[in-house]
Amino acid sequence: MKIEKAEAAQLLSLNKFIVDEEEPHIVIDKKICRECSDKPCLYVCPAVLYKLDKNGDISFDYAGCLECGTCRVMCQKKGIIKWEYPRGTFGISLRHG
Amino acid sequence: MSEEEKFDAIVIGAGPAGAACAYTLAREGKEVLVIERGDTPGSKNVTGGRLYTYALEMLGEGLFEEAALERKVTHEQIMMLGGERGITIDYHDPSFNRDGAPPMSYTVLRGPFDEWLAGKAEEMGAMVACGIRVDELIEKDGRIVGVIAGEDEMYADVVVAADGVNSLMAQKAGLIRDIDFHTVGVGVKEVIELPAKTIEERFNLLNPEEGAARMILGCTEGIHGGGFLYTNKESISLGCVFMPGEAAQHKKSIHEIFQDLKMHPAIYPLIAGGETVEYSGHLVGEAGFRGLPPKLYREGFLMVGDAAGFVINTGYSIRGIDLAILSGIAAARAVINAANPAETGPLYMKELEVIKLLPTMKAVDGYFDVLSTGWLYDKMPALANAVFGDLFTVDGKTPQKIAKGIIGQMKSHGISVWDLIKLGFKGVRL
Picture (cartoon, chains in turn blue, purple):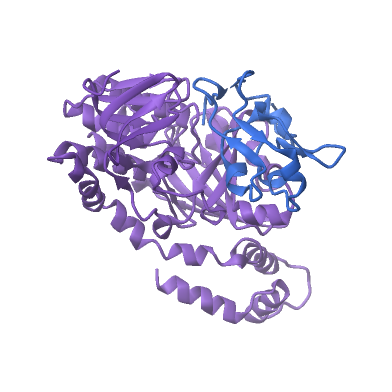
């Protein structure tokens, strides 16, 4: 991709991911997230995978996860009810790193 | 696998800490299993970054000559951005690459490097099993005796947690709690490919062997953190680290702030015409010595590398891979020299002293106080640029006295003489 101000989704498309369709490694509970006023995940996820949907709820897609763990560290209301690394061989596969 | 046919050591994670530990153990004839969740070693790992060569030398003399490294760093640069302006200080030291001595440091990409180092451990006789995630630790009579991965149970005299900054294993062992967000930074990075020749021209590099390392201040919109740029053989690693708590308060995506850095008028010309080939994110420990867990072991279990919190950030240099390698060596030495399993942990702590890891971290602990000075990240680089702007402005008006100009600029940037004294006071205690 040429050098330009890019959306996170464009940048993620450059990476190699093997998505575990059977088992998401991160699961959120939208009801808990609704009670969270700060919603730090919206700003700190490098992949911008946490978004607000039209109802104002958090939506999250684990498919482009960079596995950094920042959301896990920043989630204060524990709306992330499961955070694991993807099962073996799944997830991001960095070639450069 | 039964408890009878156990390994001498199981290492979780094939990064530099895990691989260095396995390499050292296997060299001494120990039976070692390294378990890596990525499909190849390094495929989950990110660095800025660079590697200080002395650590590889300690692992094996001359290893660096065949290591998968990028460029020898001979240009150490500090950049301060203020608005669209920028100041770059370039310290060029050819002695960092003298004949007959290992170069001081190399830029590095973790994909190729970690794969190479894990390969060296394999050559020594370690078994490296990729694509397997360790799910649980096995505990018996108060000590860790093995690991569970999927359906499999594997046993060992010692389990070494080399599973990185977000160490779920150390948490499962009860040695650390949930990570406090004040103690880590979140880094984002693009790898941007450019022809070697272009990199050499843009960074004043004499040949394809030499490279530059650059720290960037004033690119985080006031959030505690900073940018980095490393020249690889045929790519540039450009990234930025933020304290996540402040980033959340700032209410702008760190991804977007980083994209603005990429397009900054002082950065863009360095990467123009290049091609971004990878985008990554990772946590990095920021708390240094004071952030280390109270205990780095329990019976049958040792923590190494990022899992143990072994990172040094002085603002002008960031060290992690070298400390990871040192801690891997120290853990291996402890395992080799322990007369019984109960001795391994205390011996590991001694080896961390002998190898100078803990003394080094302790010696630079004060940098944490200096770097927690809020105005270093926005007002200071903005002030520096404003002062330079005044110095280089010739417009026919009667120039101000320099001191008066600087004091005026300090006032308008909200930095008092008292702020400088306070910072100086922290500085002299380093």
